[in-house]
Length: 368
Ligand SMILES: *[C@@H]1O[C@H](CO)[C@@H](O)[C@H](O)[C@H]1NC(C)=O
Ligand SMILES: *[C@@H]1O[C@H](CO)[C@@H](O)[C@H](O)[C@H]1NC(C)=O
Picture 1 (cartoon, helix red, strand yellow):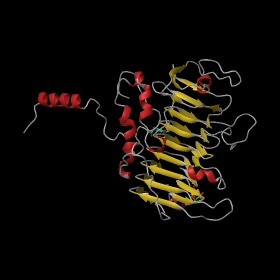
Picture 2 (cartoon, helix red, strand yellow):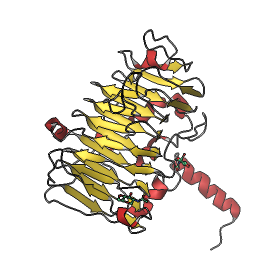
Picture 3 (cartoon, protein in one colour):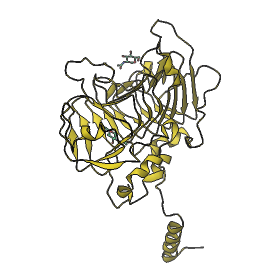
Picture 4 (tube, rainbow, N blue to C red):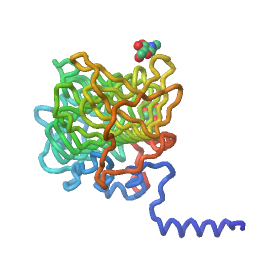
């Protein structure tokens, strides 16, 4: 039977009334939770219900007022109202948004306080060319839709100084943290460090590019409390010009799901000190270098030994000679609670699910 165009239109109208939010094919479960709402700008806190994985419970500033950043200026010793720093250091919950496009060059690392969301939707916000973000000894922080790049150490500090040494984001002794739809590139040290027994973390929908040491989960083999660390890394794009550590894991647990890896330089996933890594539904394209085809790298411990590993691959897709060396036995599943659990697609779908990685261009009144 042939469909008359008018019948077709009626059908579409009927279907969209029955299912008011129609999501584009390929959208991942986080995005599908909020991007279809044209009224997103008046319902910003709705985003806080959309995380999946170990960082699911991060509420950010959901219970607080909206705070508007009106100026890119920064005065670290006397933070002024209207600046990002002034909002981020308050004790009360705040949902921080930006009045206009801006590039913020911070004077020192920004110590984000508990119950904060930094939400770049609707404008283009970059934190760059200075020290960057530090989430230390707090819980419930969400960072969404921000470009964080070319971060440098604080004046007088060397790179690698645990959070003040030129990382994009350091998560230090903190829990319930969600980093979503950010652009992360070209910093003096790491892009994201998760250290000192931080846990309950989701890193999703980010666009990583042009950097050496991408993501460190656990900073020392001897720091045994990192065994508690649980991190979900999902729907990210590990793009061009990345060398290693996507992530590098010590002691804890990482569920690495539905990410796209585009030609790393030395390896993609590595670690030491008995970590557990479950690689599920990723899309790995190896570099052309014949000696760097292996996704995985078992690193020596600080004492020089090779310890046991528990790393598994399920439904991953491999291109250009990429291969994954599984190891270990025993349990490796994330054992998510029902609310943390999400659908992981086969690796072949990862490119579609990550095609909007990084900050989105959102216009109020339209689906984002
Ligand atoms: C090829 O990969 C190996 C192993 O990671 C590395 O040592 C070597 O520098 C790489 N060569 C090039 C040209 O990148
Ligand atoms: C990610 O960043 C790279 C480099 O700036 C850019 O080419 C790309 O379009 C961005 N987004 C995605 C989804 O690839």
